[in-house]
Length: 497
Image: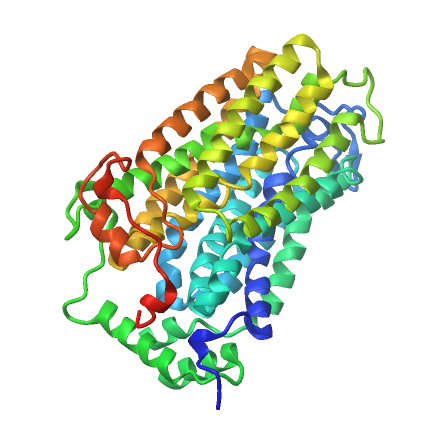
């Protein structure tokens, strides 16, 4: 007798589809990390005077402010892509968006390769952001709609691991591709990644749920069966049909962004909305985007940078490469820890740890304790990837009605990408102005985060979602009060759900 599909774990084809779809998030991480090392070579021409190579300039002179704008254009583009592609994914399908968003990245790659001035470079950064914002946002939906419940807990965290992997590979590649004209190759590799993504996605199925929503019943059944191998999909398919009918029926309700912001929803979701926004604000104002974008400059402010340019990687650049490797390992560790510890526990642990790290980074920088300061940057990055990195995307869905999840996550995504843009623009000037005192600011923001989340963030892992919705859909409240506590459920007691 075939195993019921809802009881299955990860199948080979499920894993294949998720890993292929995650290439878009890998590309997001690539563009996130690739900007870190070559900035001075591109804008300050430190590898030698500007000259022509195959008719193209060896560098693109620009002020620090303009280069900071180049850094910030990627998250700004990602914000636009995430907003625009939500509609496209609903109309044309998750698979279609994951495939064709890569066309924009290929155009961006060509612009990187032939840029003759900094405005062309900035436009390419914006376009690559639009492409990866589309892919990154659609990927989460694709995973949720193609995996089994058991597989979803593990594979749902693939997004953070893929971003970390892309950042790591980009920063390691930068160690050998920073000199002119190789920096053009470095930035253009995003097009090659996109081409690979397009080709492999043709081997993946479309979301069964989306196919059903378009009344493509036979295709939906075939896709679900292919994802579940030889399992019995009867019950899962029946539940999927009921879900789609409920979401699309005449009495169906889907909360819009204005509905949430104005409090015009059947349930009082102000607490969930506030948490979704605050988790994203605290994620970015923890200081992590500054570390991700400017770790080389940060390490140079701690160590003694070389007086003259050398084509060989210096200590700060090597440390940045090592940091990216540690980041990938930390992302994997975060996936494993999320299976054992609660969301609230990991979030509070991370923010408190980041307070300590921020303070020690500043003390080490000011007092000249370089080893301590550098070590704390590594610890800072590691603990971030355990809590505030992946969890703000998971928490809202574990306490919010299904009719409001899409709009709530859209607001959260807007907040997150806006924060990346702001910190990306502000961190370099802050580092120049405050030097070793910069991370005192982030010690303060993480302190605010830890205190605020202590009183507002309930534990959501292992809780029955209807219980969470009923308990916390009462407006903004202090969750430390006894009446807002929910107990962990046993699967066997709720197995009919």
